[in-house]
Image (cartoon, rainbow, N blue to C red; front, side, top):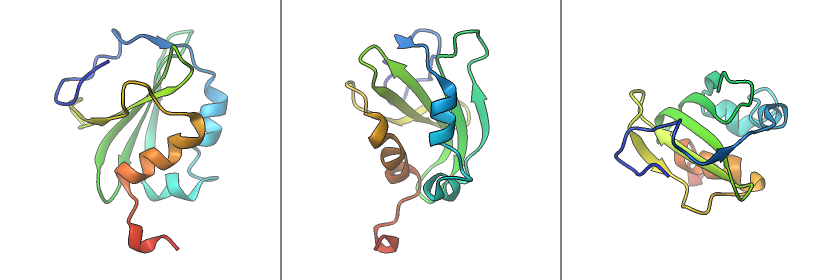
Length: 118
């Protein structure tokens, strides 16, 4: 795994092929208000025949930059928050996170303001 402070290396990670239609439906700003609040745009998918990476540009209250999502060998997601130039600012722990935690984890790091939550 890449560490905080390093440049992200999308080639060296031990990640698996992702089924992108499911991930895209989960991270669709038109269907999910949290994702819309991040200002998520510029969605990029690994251009190989077997996609292993998903990236988006976000502009939230706490973080502005890229969010990289990988699927690791345990079928959990590794998420990296990087600057525009690719320096890692934050990441999930080494175990990864489950699909039902993905949006909330990113939201806490990018946009969530506790005072706004009812």
